[in-house]
Length: 104
Image 1 (cartoon, rainbow, N blue to C red):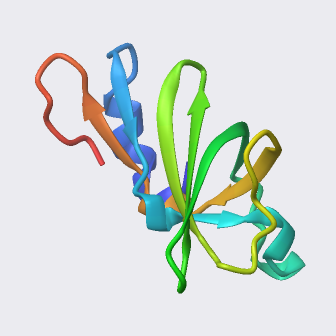
Image 2: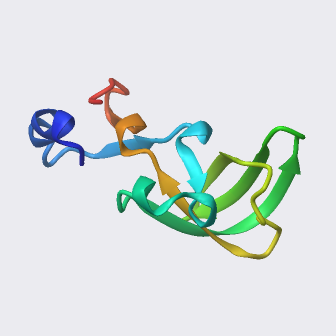
Image 3: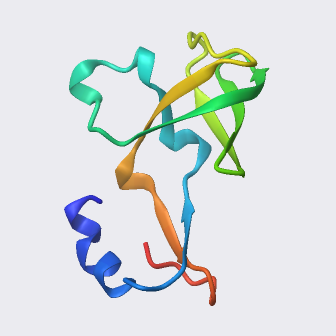
């Protein structure tokens, strides 16, 4: 968790939380320069790739939850592959599952 969010996440300890990541907060790890990789990653099997010209929308399931990533059109993402994605940790959102209120 980025230091900026440390206090908020400490206060949420013990609560059931929902993680929110916008599609534009993902990047194909294979296309990301080494110095841009900060260790926040995930991988999932690709179910559908939507080619939109200037970007790809990659649809996946991660631990039973739907995930959509908007990645560079140069990505080699294709149906059936296990894609590795970088997550911009400064752009994540956390919500209290009971109230729906934003924690981050």
